[in-house]
Image (cartoon, rainbow, N blue to C red; front, side, top):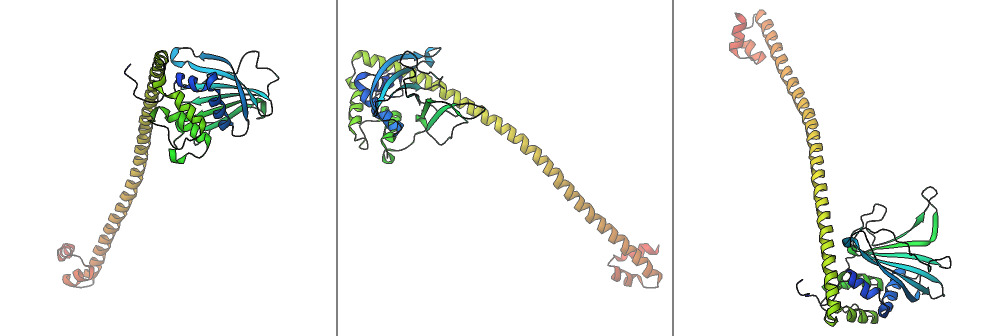
Length: 314
């Protein structure tokens, strides 16, 4: 792999995700991010890492998943399962002895590095809160189990538009590897630590190798997904154009036939009227001739050519 030119790691890679959110020395970063995500619903005071695992049938689908045992300001315990996903995710309810009826709540938090394109969700929203409902009664089945999906790819605010702490976290999640220095908008102390932890120049040779491998895997998967999506869009566009053209041609034929019939009918009626008027003039000319008028007088009265009047004499 060629030398990494970026100053900071990408948090969209498994390595970056795990380094910032999945290590005990950086648990304060995770707590800060989760509190900004929950926005008052839960106020986390401490976390304990329960496990760390990779889930997926093949290497390209593997993603880091880890559970954190959280305690809020009231001393209540709950579990948050963190997922870094650049594939459509499978639900992974937290496992193990820690998940029991003493828990107040269990959350799955999935940071999505792709557009979910789920019909059930509002396409303009970045955050999606999902619970379990009975499909028949539409009532909540278990209000202790919730899923929070964050579509990072949809976040498009600029540095000048960052209003909340959560905005700033999403900005960092999406753009960290593109930055050359810490933006002035990220003045909070938590970001001081984050930028120090994310600086590639401070990595050991082992950490650098792990990050390079993780970055390559992320780029390979992302390129594959982007190619598949582009192909799907092109095929959809081609199919839509073909269908639209066929429909347009059919409509054009129908409108053309209708217009042609209308035009033909109008033309036929006009011709019929002209022929009828011509016959009426000839009939009038014969009567005038029989009354003794001269050919010149009949031609003037009927507006028929003198030659036509003379033919009537024969």
